[in-house]
Length: 379
Image 1 (cartoon, rainbow, N blue to C red):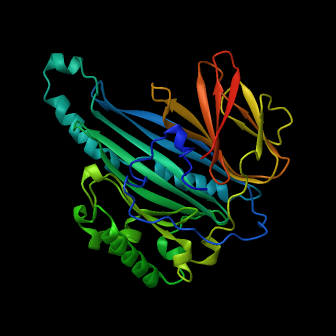
Image 2 (image 1 turned 90 degrees about the vertical axis):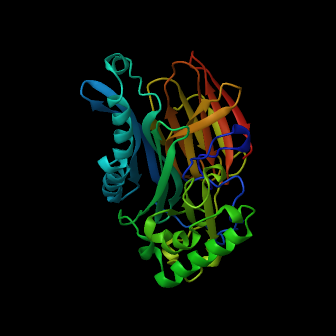
């Protein structure tokens, strides 16, 4: 499924700071687990995304705003999705401790102002934004990477992150020890891989605190499962200067044989290459529907089996490209001949990106009159 928010190189979509690979990646790309053939029948999983915004008060003033994602997970033929959704959204809702640094910094800045300054308080430079990236969803595993960005009045935000992994069969959250066949051996493998990879990296001289990070990475929660392997990540400034950016270590599944339980390995390679989806402007006849608004409708029909289909709203960078994307809807698979009908807001110009299968992408542009233009992009 790859990094789902990276639709295609041509889209210039920014990676999340806590989850992205640095400009000089530490790890070498792995081939992942061997593809199983034929693809086993697995329950369909649907995920709907929503972003909520809340304000923090200081007396009568709005001190700052914070935003955070909420997900609705539905697992075909199972009640596990409801329990998973409730627990996941509880983890995604920021706690007072998570907000405390922003509250303290903004409160101190507000207190230092005179009456005229307080009346013109604009909250500029202060805020909290939590975002989520779906890294793997299929078989027994749903794994996400969460990024927290705290604006404390400094030139750049303070970033941190953590991973969350669930068992789609039971609906329960998985600790690293639960996915491991041999947890001490897995811990040792992670430590050795991180230290060896960092030593070979061009930024090797800039790293610090690697030994402690490598030894405690699985316990700290800074990990997730992707389609390619077990990913250990560090946000900016945790193990390298801010200029280096976030750092990710991808340990391919091929190197984790005997260390991770088979049920948590990918069940097969992605399905659905270029041309696997046909796009039409009518959602009529769709066997699966995703209502995202009350405006224009279009349909995506699978000509062959498709896995890992993500629909995102694209945000323009003002220069003819795309600055970022906001995930809206994900479905783990479509059978051949099955159709997904999508209803989206029809006001103003909105562009949507779709990624599916092995990273094939397309863009759907909706103009203010509800018209749609389709453009295919190779990932």
